[in-house]
Image (cartoon, rainbow, N blue to C red; front, side):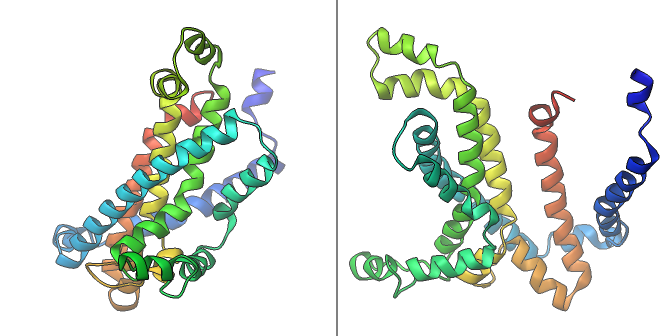
Length: 263
């Protein structure tokens, strides 16, 4: 039986190898075509550094927003019962399958100057989100939050509720129980969700360019800089892509034990 497991049938092995090549060859092409000799100079170019700093800042802020809003939402879905909970869960996952450009258009219709909420924000607080750095954060949070909610909800469902019940029996309030018992129990799930959320925010393109535009130093993140460089300087686009590739590999390496622990 062990030998049968080790030897895959040819009818499965050939498509599997083709599928692996299909996924790996583009990455190899990126590495092969990279301008390694001028890489340090290109990485320290002002435009690259500005896009990298902005990407790191906005992705981090978007992750904070997702944590503040997504963890309570995940708790609501996992720990409470209310009419339409399945529909709410479906709504939470819509940004996962929604084309990012459509998400950007939707954000414009809501937070634009004449949007459902944007007009009120502009008139009341003088706050304008489209085509600003804050708009980048909003766009990234919109597309990234489902990753956090799904991860945290899964951790909540897998956590032993008896500890929370014991804390309540000892007189702890709901907030104290959540802060002192629930959060420590689901901390690995929250951390994994936050990392995935941050990585998704870092790589966001469609909603960002639609809702926030592509202004260097203000809304031009790394993916947008890649898009612009692809039209002007292929080597610069490759360098920027390498940076995002390194970040992606680092994220996968950090989450390897969580995802592949059973392998």
